[in-house]
Length: 308
Ligand code: DON
Image (cartoon, rainbow, N blue to C red; front, side, top):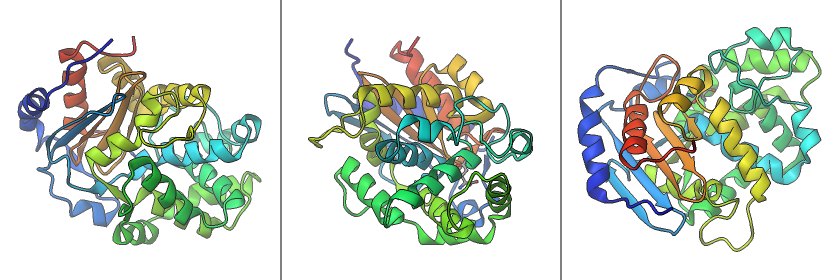
């Protein structure tokens, strides 16, 4: 099925959701994020045919935060077999906030899924075990997926997270106490904070995530990034776990696999069709972009697309 996007369609969606700005809250538990102007709003669509449509602040870079959890899981899937990954981290939604410690104690240090903080820290631990320079490898990976060599880490954001990272440190040390950790906790946390501090714009992210719309193949990259099955598995996890305790509501309203970050970005995928990224820094109560969710809901209604 072909979807007919246009810059006008995207402009119209942004125009309609803009009044929501002012009703959410910019993340402030990472001080460097609190300084971002809340009035920004952007959207970008990348079709599997390679077309790009954008509107608003689609070329303004922001902190991708938890969106990076999909990229680190993808890298881990290229270095580990299935059982090595899924014995250390689960595949179930947590129904709890992204930084909760509650289930971790009850479930003996095995995080529910790779998209909550605990799960992504386990994935970062796995990458530390098998990559010689994990931070550089992540940068190389993102640059390859986007074809853009100047994508980098926002070191101010990474430092700010490290300085205010007590909860993530508690999560990591709790997992270590259960034996589910291989490396130095602080080294792994620093890597994790850097991944979250990747700075990209909507258009770059839409290109970056096109491999998940395209069965594991990235535009302009000859070798497959992952297999079609792995791509399907990641999309399934995004649908059930990508928006934390807002995942059910998001599937109900929008019906696309998605992954959010507290920088206000959301990436969504419709397999075999397109990847779409929205960005608006103010968040709802689950830590997902408030205007971003509304824009995606409007997009899926206007083009008549969801995965259902
Ligand atoms: O570890 C953290 O808390 C942040 N670096 C990432 C959290 C996040 O993006 C959750 N997303 N909605």
